Image 1 (cartoon, one colour):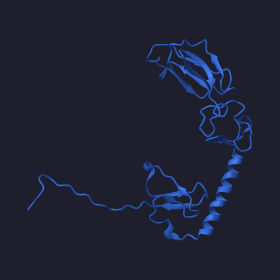
Image 2 (image 1 turned 90 degrees about the horizontal axis):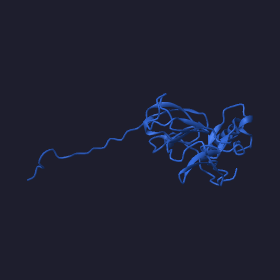
Image 3 (image 1 turned 135 degrees about the vertical axis):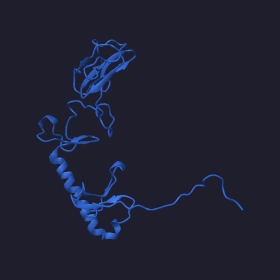
Image 4 (image 1 turned 60 degrees about the vertical axis):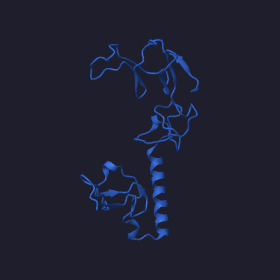
Length: 198
């Protein structure tokens, strides 16, 4: 697909400004639970003439333009949609239409299940080998600034809203462990009323 693709959408008036996307479907004046859009205009849903295109308002008119990051030369960015040619596993090149299992989303597109399993196995082996070389002991996993797996020492990111004591499984080595949050007590004081003085 040419990154400079620009196809006029004659079905949509240029003065319409309310457009959302749902996968490849572009929706103008989208209904809200079967209620008409607040602007009173009719809802219109269009599929692009080719996968990888999406609607964009340019100079007061609607056009189909390329949304595929790979076609547009924007490597390393998450792409909302891709063209058919780039809808392939980022490791082996298998087309999505040939997959039998759900793929893993990545910054570069997706990895098919066999490729992701190979990547996971390699990451596990590497982490366990590094762990064996480093000669960790239990104290290396106590009172740390981040959660680390005590089987392979992989750092595990935990969102604040998920803080709490729990049993966890490492995403790298599949080892199970107990996570305990440690709290440090500090003190703050503030004068009530007038400051006492001599």
